[in-house]
Structures are given as structure tokens and as C-alpha cells.
Length: 105
Image (cartoon, rainbow, N blue to C red):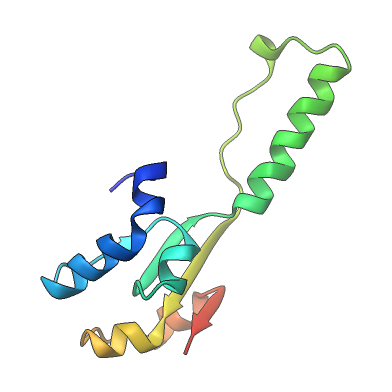
């Protein structure tokens, strides 16, 4: 599933259906883990906005937008909802738990 407005708006339904039918799911945004999704891994949106602000600054100072380099996300977040993972029978390895930016108990 790719990130878009439809998926974010309907995250409760998507998470519920995945759990109901036993579909393993890793989501793209921390909001999914906060809404009972087992695991979320994706770009840190705050950092993306900071990068975008740098582009805006350059453009406002006369840079040609077509000549600015494309930047990829530099920071990613791993959020694990341990309570949901346990309820779904998913055993999350300790090494993965240690890499998580946030654990939801």
C-alpha cells in the first residue's frame, strides 16, 4: 500500500480489516501504529518539511527550481505497537525493538 490521502483518511478501516483477516501489515506512517497498526516505518515528516523549507528559501533567493537537486528523505521512523503485535501473535525480535524510535506499549 502506498501513502496517499485515501489510505490515511481510512486508516482505521484498513487496520481493522488487516487484523480481521490476518494480513501482516507494516504501514508507512507513525499514525497507523498509533491507531493499532502493529508496525510503521517511513520518512520523518517533520524532517521532510525542514528540507522543503530549505528549498523554499533557495527559490525565494533566486534559485531556479528546475536546477535544484532532488533530495531523498534522510531520516526514517520505526514505530512498533507492541500491544497490537502481541494481540495478533506477532513476536517482534528484541533486535528490532531496540532499533525502534518509538514503542507503543
